[in-house]
Amino acid sequence: MNSFYVHIPFCIAKCHYCGFNSQPLEQPAELKKYFQALSREIGDHRTGIDILRTIYFGGGTPTIAPVKLIEMIVSRMQPWAPNAELTIEANPGTVTLERLRSLKGMGFNRLSLGVQSFNDARLKQIGRVHTGRQAAKAFELGSQAGFANISLDLIYALPGQSLNDWKEDLAKALSLGPQHLSLYSLTYEPETEFTKKKAEGLIHPVSEELEEEMYLTAIETLGSAGYLHYEVSNFAKKNFRSRHNINYWQAGDYLGFGAGAHSHLDGKRWSNYKNPDQYIAALTKGESPVEMEEKLTRDQQIFEAIFLGLRMTEGIDIEEFRTKWGIKPGEYLPQVWRKLEKNGCLETKGDNLRLNIKGILLSDTILSDFAP
Image (cartoon, rainbow, N blue to C red; front, side, top):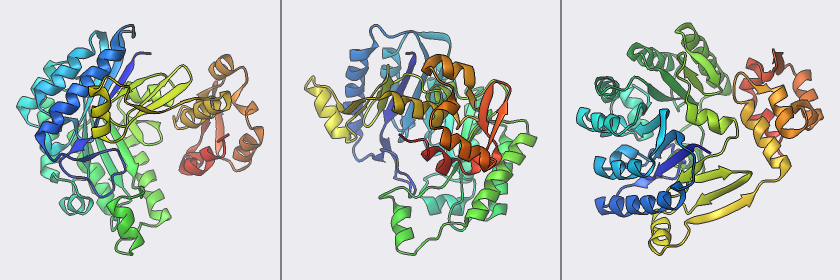
């Protein structure tokens, strides 16, 4: 186990589409209490853990916090491997050159910018607090600060968004030259502002045909620009795939810290209180912040190995899977695999079993069929 995830649930404002465990920061004093709790939780687990190979600060908006608080948490995580990947997410409206240099100096070497769009009207529509110009500037500042690995997040299939709008976002992103891109189709998560507006008929989802066209356009555009499409939603230049996320997709072990953070270790999964106040209160009293834990059955673990493995465009290594689980992938729920073959969604490449582009387009439906 050599991957840590740190969750910072605070942000400037809650985006209209966001279903993550996050909330607007009301009082700066909340941050100090939260980071003190984080420090306690990490201290309880750090001893005896392997040298870390990936660390990921997500949110929320981690860069909403003062540099000194972030540095306090980073110092609790040492040592890490010389080639470790240390990622921090950032909202383009919360970074300065000085702040980015400080983050680089404390060990972060990968910057993930939540751009979502470069279109100011679209950004306002979804509740972002930055402009397209600020997003481009944040990338430039990241480069100036010494980050040689910068990822951009973009969202497509937004209400009212046209194919040309999406092409313009892609073109602007490529003009900056990021090493990595994560492209997400809008989903209407429960209890979000967008879901409420959709139910009230105030906004309307784009058609499935347009959503598919946007996705295929992205694959073609980024492929032509030299990006490897390595996971359903992720694209990278050579040697810049997200190692932290690959560990998730390979059903690896990791520890998560912070409100709502999940952990997975030796077939066991647990998660912390989602409410930051509950999380802080538990740790302040010297109690565990864990709210839920479960021991995964063998079927659950095999399902997750298939579900996550097929999200990777290289698919599942058949022999590695057999070595770990004692069966080949096709021997688990063979009727589902036969259905995939019959519908022309599956292919074998070398030693790997993977979804083709038709399968990837239908992946949400397909992968649910493997659930135990």
